[in-house]
Each structure stands twice: as structure tokens, then as C-alpha cells.
Image (cartoon, rainbow, N blue to C red; front, top):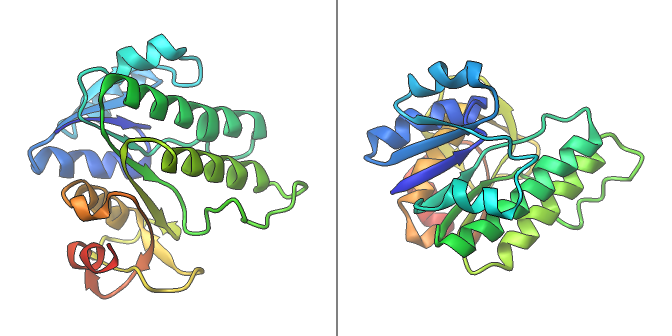
Length: 215
């Protein structure tokens, strides 16, 4: 597949890109800062410069035209509610709409374990903008005609990837970013994950088998 990897310089994306390339995919990693291009291209991906916060519909169409799949691994990083809404909700939704228009039918969203419209985070909580934005984006994705999968990892760590996860564990655990990168690759390869919201922690089951069992 020809994949647009949105948020290409993020920690998860930098781990996912070489795995996707190794799996035989063509990866276009979308980044905002040209200083990150060399690091991104060292993964085997092609760096694509674009500011997803400022793209209009035509810009999104141009960015995604010719791609078979979109992997959303971007995020504003918290701290600025306005930017969180602009990236995690508005830009994400714009990417979904563009993917439908240009025929990039496969879409994998990296969300988080507790993402839901019933997230229960109060508006005075600094986490509210993120929780609400991710929930709105995920809900919009569910309403599209895309072949979507929502991956919902728990708290992210920098531990070495084990290649093993738990899709049945309760919220409150953790998962290595390396394992998240591996779930992106595994989900893209598995049609059975289409239309699924898949929460997970690190665990004892091989990633592919875990996704098959949860799908």
C-alpha cells in the first residue's frame, strides 16, 4: 500500500515507518518542520512537508491523492487547548473527509484507551480539550465510508517493544510505543480489524494473534 503517515516525526511514527517499509509499503511521512526531513527519511519513508493545521480541503486532497491508506499518528501534544482542537479534532476530521474524496479507503487512527464521547472529563480539566477532540474525531471516523480501524493504546512508555499485547485488559495499564508501531502494521494487514475500536495494553499475546482474537 501507499500510505500517508500523518505526524511523521512523532515517536510512534518514527518507529512505525521502518516497519511499514520493511513490510513492503510505500510510506509518505507528513511533517511540518523541514529540519526533521533527514531523520524521517532515514526510516525509509519519504518526507512530505505540510502544515496540517492550515490546510484547506484542496490542500488535504492534494496531500492524500494517490494514497491507499492513511495512518493518523499526529497530535498537538497538549498544553494549548486551541491547538489541540485544531490538530486532534479539526485536522483529523479534515483528513478523513479528504480520504473519502480521493479514494484513500483504508484509515488507521491512533487514539487512546479511554476515548469516548462519554469520557467524563470535566471542562475545567486540562485534559478536556484532548479527550473531547479525540472523541469527536473517532466518532466522525465511525460515520465515514472508510475502512477504518481505531487503535486505542493505554499510557505510552519508552520500554523496548515485546511484540505482545493484551486486548482484554482493563484501562490503567501501559504499552510501549514500539508495540503501538507494531499494532499499526498488523492492523493494516488484517481486514478483520476494519470497523473496530481496539483498546490494549502490553501483555502476553503476540500482536497479530491478539488483534485476530479481538476482531
